Amino acid sequence: MDEDIIVPLIVFTFIFAMVALIMAQSRWKARHKLEAEGREGASLGTGELKALMREAVEEANEPLLARIEHLEQELAQTTRQLPLAEKRLDEMMEASTPAPVERRSVT
Image 1 (cartoon, rainbow, N blue to C red):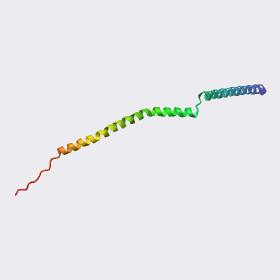
Image 2 (image 1 turned 135 degrees about the horizontal axis):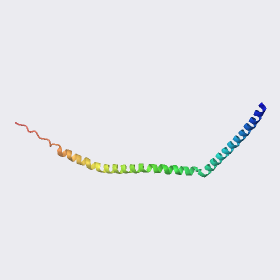
Image 3 (image 1 turned 90 degrees about the vertical axis):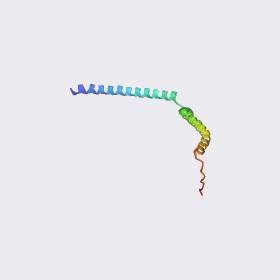
Image 4 (image 1 turned 180 degrees about the vertical axis):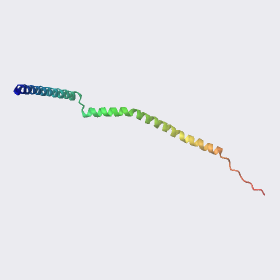
């Protein structure tokens, strides 16, 4: 009686294992085929990658460079106005400083 159960159980297990292995192999082949196709179509050369990186860095730096240029223009304008402001300040200081008073001796 044990032989009536053991033989079909072994046959069923063998068939199930074979089907599982065949399905795993076909999934593995399909996955690697898709990966290989993806790598061929989307691969970038070193030059292309460098160009993309350079373009991204330049694009990111544009607002910063514009701000630096604006600040440099403001600095140049301020330095041009600085001597005039110093001259006016000197004139104001001279005008507000009282003239020295001469002391006369009483005799």
